[in-house]
Amino acid sequence: MQFPFADFSELKEKKILIVGVGGLGAVSAEILTRCGVGRIVIMDYDTLEEGNLNRLIYNTSQVGKKKVDALEVHLKKANPDVRVVGHPFDITDGKGYDLFVEEVGKSDVVLGCVDTFHVRLFMNSQCVKAGKPLIDGGASTDGVNGSVHVVIPGKTPCFRCNRPALGETAREEAQKPERAREATGVCHFTSLPTTMGIVSSLQCQETLKLLLSFGHIASYLMYHGLEGVLERYDWERDPDCPVCGDIVHEK
Image (cartoon, rainbow, N blue to C red; front, side, top):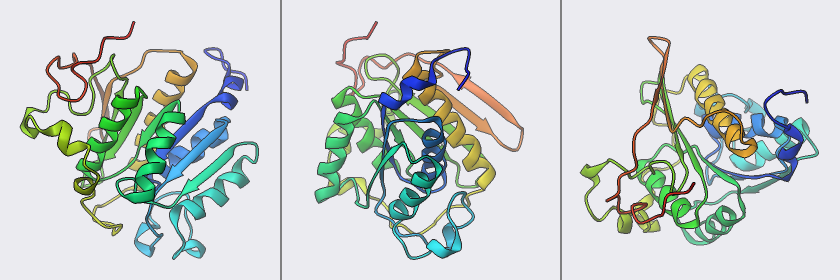
């Protein structure tokens, strides 16, 4: 692949963990698979339902299957040279928790594509603890706005930084698996495939910049769909953050 800013062949040595393979995660997984990332691990306990079919990637013949199983087949067809590993477990409980911690340690970057706040806090805490970058993506409940938050432990603000309303016990709360899961796999929010495609593409763009060391990482991007506006925000780490405040700044 001819690309003037980086050597894409380096991606074959990279390892990515994607948590949540609904509207955001499935698209992100396909993009990174087609780019040639060497190993992609996908984690999601959910089963595909008819209500999920407004997302991209999945189709009617896959209804009733585990999302990771359906997506794994699709990705292997898209690029058989990429090793795809699917774990159909909840990352906050039992075997899923153990696998998540293990896979975080093996990964170069973790992509968060979940729709529950406490799971985000939990992932943030674990990634900061392991010193692994987390690129979190999310869409608004009305389906037209989205954001991407890049957490590089010791360098950029973590997901807990500058959120004083969470209280001083955020570190403890975020690391309790039993408190992390807020919802079942039922689709609660409007999910426009256009918004999902935009936000997941932004996640992958920052992932590629991070993996291949080109361009400038945007620590926080906000997409406003109604206005057609993309805004970048850069702020300082919170030195008193209960999750990442004691980490030495990386040069």
